[in-house]
Image 1 (tube, helix red, strand yellow):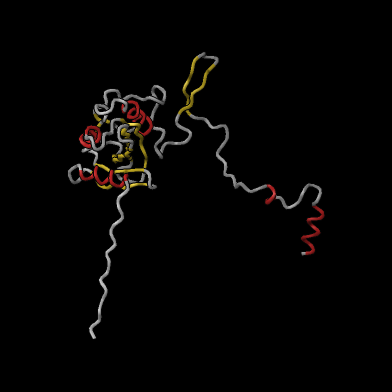
Image 2 (spheres, rainbow, N blue to C red):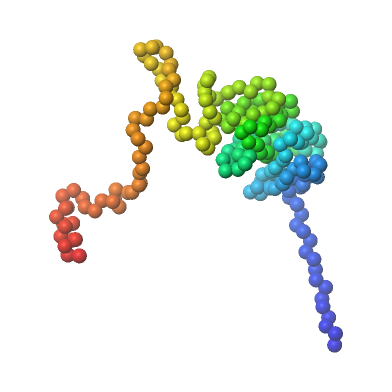
Length: 221
């Protein structure tokens, strides 16, 4: 008697969520190589990793294509990964007011390679690009006003880099004798100390006045 095998049912793939469909549509709308990868993070955040040189064309498409209509750059920021060859990530958070969805675009660069500015696409990016330059030293090519925005005049270095010292290089104080604000090298009033954070109730073996009781207990043991 021949064995009768029941036909196996092939499970249909689960339908894409709205955010997964958004990521898939963006990837399909650009040439190969423009977007390295895309994903939905924590089930609520659409994110794509894009090529740096293709950024202006990609951002223009995301703004002008009616399927996406990202007419607002909410903000952009830098992220420092010192161990990587391209240590900086530049993160753009886009918002579509018409379609009520958001997208995060991430590119990478190093300390010397400039990133194309998106100020001609979203004028609001001027402040954010200046902040990323000030804090991380990320250069934006085509930015017409690349000046420091948070640190003081003549500040040296970029304070949000992971290799920037926590104490900085100089300190500012008012000198009553000169009647002026002066900059001086950082002088710490005391050396750094290592704290063991041991609770006093754990480290204390006796209470004041109980030394004799403690010694008697050690003798008995």
